[in-house]
Length: 570
Image (tube, rainbow, N blue to C red; front, side, top):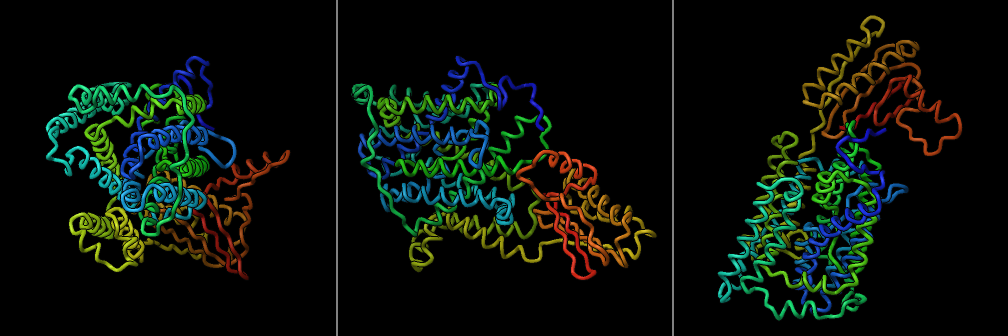
């Protein structure tokens, strides 16, 4: 049961009055629209015409509208039930640029669908895949994505391939002022102005570009002189799968899945005053919705979508986290998709403005990745994983000729800094996991003589030495105490009992082994999907009275040898 935070005006399950619902939806739609600029970048890289790019932006608004609604669904397997709208994500920009440059737009769209399938698969096996993505690896992936994005942004800011342009000085001035305005609002502004700093920066940069002559009057006139309404064309859409691009888009799908975990967890925290730990149901549903939304983006000729953390921050600051705002925002985006002037204005955004926005976003991704990595202590094993993988990734940019000369079968894993860095980090992590599980056994000849309290105290001290969270250790000791008490009271043990506590960075496990009769606790760790009449009462009361609350319980008996495993998610 969640407790409504007092600082929210409209909580997640509350419906604002219609006028405010429309205004809040319009605010959200405006923030979503800012990220349409990433579609422009990729379409230009793929050689798309003006009309094709306008249609891609319109189709992107439709895809974003559908993705926003899917994420807000709260019944069934799809959707987190929170206001966590997707945006066209910087996570997919690097791989999409690579695909557009080398294989064309059909590869961008086809590989985006592939990345979406990766995210959908991860959503179905989220708990089992945690071992591959501890905080250090997850943070490293976010950081390396930020580095690759930042390199694209720096290229746009410095316009390295066109330094002889007569407007080059103006280009640098506009880029510098745009970045300065964006950073200034993020540091010294307050309230909504600070949260919308990127939007303010892009609008200011656009006006500066007009003032410095980087956007001409004729271009503006052409943008507004087109038809008022149009139906987006799908003539530019085709799909292809290119194996050399698979690692880059695989990693993008993984990074997108990780961001959903973070965003939905944040939504849970800001909507529950008594929040203690993430709920897997909404996270899995949100990841599935995000993957489907990304697939829709690829099918409609756009780049990948992913939940937008900045939009969650705005909803928190405005005090309106109602999921119904998503339906309003989706409807507004759908309506504006039929106005070609919207897409035309995005096409006019010059490179210095786009580059400044990318550098700004990349800075947050890099530092965010570092913060995630440092959320757990970095041991010697992880030092090698991060250090070696980062050096390999950066060397791809420095020694490109060497990596281009590698055998064909290695090219998919070394074609980009992102693919090389993340692939090497995962391989090293799996190798260095050998011997990481810590375990301690405590044996007692007779619980009547020793007492369960002594065993539990020794397990408690060992768990504390591993630096585990206090609430996790407390839950483990309380549950173990209850199980040992049940065993003692029911006289099920004949001989020696052994209690073993182990930890592997993900699960804290207490294994209780003894000879005798297996203790029956049928409800523990079992999830009943249908509870009829009095079942809901007896099911819940039995759990409450036993006082046993692991995340999962496994018990086996072979002959007289009994084993009970209490598993607590860390």
